[in-house]
Amino acid sequence: MSGHAFDGTPLSGEIDPEQLPMIPDVSGNTINGLGETERRQPSPIYWHNPRELAWGELQTWMLKKTAHEVPETRALDHQLGGRGSKERAPVAKSRAGKSAEEWTEAAKAFALSHEADQAAVAEMRTEWFFEGMEEDLPRIVIMAVRMDHADLAAAPEPPSIIEVMRQYNRGTRAARALADWIRKQGYRAEPHGGPTAGPLTLIPPALAAGLGELGKHGSIINREFGASFRLAGVLTDMPLVADRPDGFGVDDFCMNCRVCEKACPPDAIAPAKQTVRGVEKWYVDFDKCVPYFNQTYGCGICIAVCPWSRPEVGPKLLQKMLRRLDRA
Image (cartoon, rainbow, N blue to C red; front, side, top):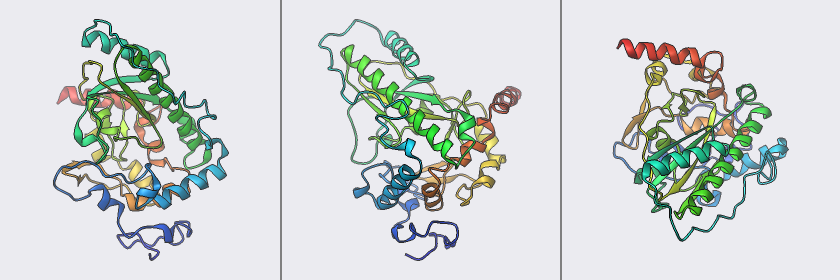
């Protein structure tokens, strides 16, 4: 592999030369379905078993480098608050006679009292599962856990990745606790938390459940948290009422804002939407992003500089966009 990105941009001098021979012949954008006009399930590309991924060697390199240089990110089961028990509670043989509305209220209340900052429900869709990884659980409870923006703003320095992993741990604990509670009510439930990926990508159901809108940087922007939060989820067959998508002007704002675009060191954030697996959406160039992401502990610059994420800016921006929507 030559020292160039797939679009010909030189990588030497910007990317750790150790990564260059690991970059595969297949573009990550191709795996992701960039430019494809037909809808399909996403293909596993990162945060799955590295032995089964074209870019898996780079994933392994990144995790080893980060663990060596930021020891707080090692052994997450025992550090940064841990991730909760890996063993799931048995499914109770009897169920209480509650309506879907009552179960929804109870499940959300449990999540919010067990470390989640927000909780919402979506009906599962096949296209949210990675190909070959479908499960037969029809609903998902999506939870958001807020990050400390002061630590996130240090990106791409170690305090940022430590905070990211701390909140991934919190989200995983919340998901495992909620899954056990649901199982004790007599329903099946399987928790999923980051950073490694489970059988589905969590952003689409989070959008469907109303946790925010997709931003230009490829992350969700939430009314309260901006882009400064992480997701976890619980797949279940408990009868629940799905929430509705939310819209508060993010899409229009991102069309004209270039803050994350200009701040991205590898120039991976496009100025306009692109077609990905049959959907026009904001998309971050995988081939440009990942090498820099790998050598900077997961980067995070784009969500740190996002105006919506900044505590002194986000709330005012929300009110401004809501007024604009009212006038429209």
